[in-house]
Amino acid sequence: MAVSTTFNISIIPQTDAKVESTILGHYFYNSVTLILPGANSLPQSILECFNDQLFYKVHSLPIYRLVEVPFIQAFVKRGSIHMLSANTRLDTHDCVAVIPSGWLILHLTKDTYIELGLEASKQTHQQKSSDVYVVKINLLASHFKPGKKNYDSTLWCLKNRLGLTFDFYLTWEPHQKNVCSSSVSSYFLDKCKKVERGHLTRKMNVLTSLPFPKVKVNDPVGKSSDDACHYLEVFEWMGALACCVDMSVADDKSSYMSSLHCPEPSHNCPVCCLFQTSGFITPGTVIQLFKALRMYAAANPQSPPASLTTHGFRDSPIIHTTCPNHLQTCGDNLISFLYLPDNQCWLYRAVAS
Image 1 (spheres, helix red, strand yellow):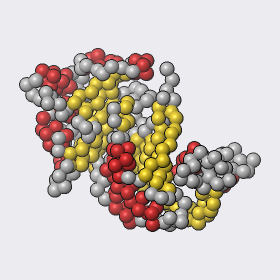
Image 2 (cartoon, rainbow, N blue to C red):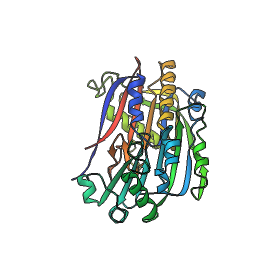
Image 3 (cartoon, rainbow, N blue to C red):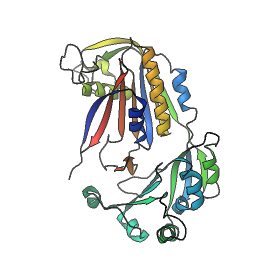
């Protein structure tokens, strides 16, 4: 059964509850792109959103360390833990994740699953055809503790069979503000080969005389072509801009590089700041960015709509809530916000079907 990805759009008020629910539903963010019309640099309020964004790379960590009681007590119960196996591919490797709700997700190949001896969840059609087995362990379950059969057997299998070790991207946000989030890196120092601090990569371009598509808040499909562009045309234009596609030569028939151009109708934007960052980004940071960008858009009502686009990790074993990643498709870990007048925004979401 083929899996395809389609895009849908929602018109939502910029209420914190709705937006935070959408953002928190995605666990692992790999990159963020901001389009800020009217700005020739990144506002300080947006830069400050990254001040508390700490992440680490833990090298050669034995997986059984993730079910030990000290780890669960100190970090799973007392904060939001995000862990994702690094440099692993869903279609050929074993992949692992720990999500804030306390679940340890093992996305295993058939050989690993058979040798490990843990019970897998019911397979989807796609997982069966790909020989993929997903083991889900609830670290916060009341019965998951030493002395209980389920805990003891799980720990024994992870510790004594195969000796599975992984490199992990890691970040932890404690529930208590007086607790330092870097303490999680200290915890793993003597339990793995190496712990190193990660750094976000950043890139910024300032564009001038940029053709910008016209949109209407309540007309995403552009029924009147003289007044507004279709939301998919706007989304394609945003993607081309993020990829630094030269859309000024689209009408040149001799050019074979790209046929992309700004959809019509459009208007000229004298200056626009394009900012991109990538690394291991938490939902909390994305929520801060959303609020900062909302304030920026409200302060510049005459400028074209600003936008925030996020991508998750292509090889994450889980995308959002309890939805598994779909192999060999792209986009179902993407969300994008386009800020519009009247305190509203368009929410783009990719949905696998």
